[in-house]
Every structure is written in structure tokens, then in C-alpha cells.
Image (cartoon, rainbow, N blue to C red; front, side, top):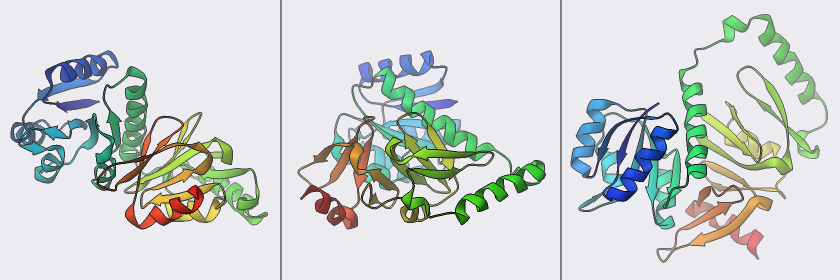
Length: 256
């Protein structure tokens, strides 16, 4: 995987570059200026950009707006109050500084899974009979009693079927055509929509908090608020999930 780092703090840039290289990521460029970064990203066409939000005269959101080429974007910042806007810009992740190796690995795992889904060719015809077998299994499970009353949920991916305990699910995120179920053990990519999962999941255990996120109520560790009125959630795995304005009332009900 190839990346560009956009960071105006030299020490932070150096540390992030070091961590990325140690994880086998190719760093194409390290930029500290928004305008230069835009030209560099458009020219180099990296897979992902690690983008600081505070960049002097401009910010990271300005960089995204001006890009002709659209890579995956991971925001890096010392402040949690930008999380909502970052995810509204379809960021893949939002990492708070100082960035630890463990937290960065989680981001890289997410990027790898997303990249695999994006580059996999349509295997429908290649799988042939196997595909039909999978479909029969799915239909059989669906014909039984509703999944909402079970302790597990069926997650369909391109080439496998997984049964996941409700209690293991931390949150579910959707980014364009990809939906990712994040558990305390692993991650599952699926083509099912958040709306479909919203119907399957028990509403006393899960909550829609954003157009792109459903969270497990039991896995919410902390509610983060800032002076601008934005709200986000820190989950048990340290991921930060934005709360959309239209979903705030849902959150208030469970906090009362």
C-alpha cells in the first residue's frame, strides 16, 4: 500500500512515517503545506492519505475539497471535535494523536480489507455451483425464525457465511458500497446495507447514530462532546464514532 503523509508538525510527521514504514507501507511523500499536498497527491495518486486537520492557513478539509484524485483518507489530529465532519467527508478513519502502533495497525487492517473488496473482481460466474450452495444455505436460515430473536446474526460476504454473536459486535460502518461489521475479534465485510442490518439487529442492543454507523449500546465507553455542540462516541476498541445531528435524540433516550 502506498501513502502520502500531510502533517505540519515535523516530529509527528517523522514518527508517523517511521511507524508506517515499519508496517510495510510505502511512503511516497511527506508534505507540510496544504497547497503543495494537493499537487503531490494528484500527481502521485497514493492509495491512502494520512491527513492532519490543522495545516496553518488551510485545513485538511480544504485539501479533500480541492483534490482531483480521491484516495482513501485517514484524518490525524489531536482534537476529537472534528470527528463528525471528518466522517461526513467519507474518511476511512480518524486517529487521535499521539498515534500508537496498536491504533495504527487497526487502521491499516481496515484499509487492507476495504482495498481487497474494492479490487476483487466479480466472482459470481467463477464460483458457479458454490454460489448456488451458499444461496441455498442463506435461504434456509432466513426461512427459519427471525434472526432478531436469536443470539447470533448471519453475515454474508463474497465467499463465506459467518454467524456472529450480537454481544461481539462493537459497531457497523458503511462506506459507499461497503459495509463492515466490527467485532471484538475480527472484521467482516458485506454488501448488505445499514438499513438491512437495522432491521435484523435488536433495537434494545443497537442504535443508529449516524447515516454511516450503527453501534452496540453495551460497547459505548464514553460520550465525547465539544463546545461547538458536536457529539461522538468512544467505543470499547478505542474507535471514535460520530453522532449525526438527526440521530442525537436516539442517543439521548438511552442516556436518560
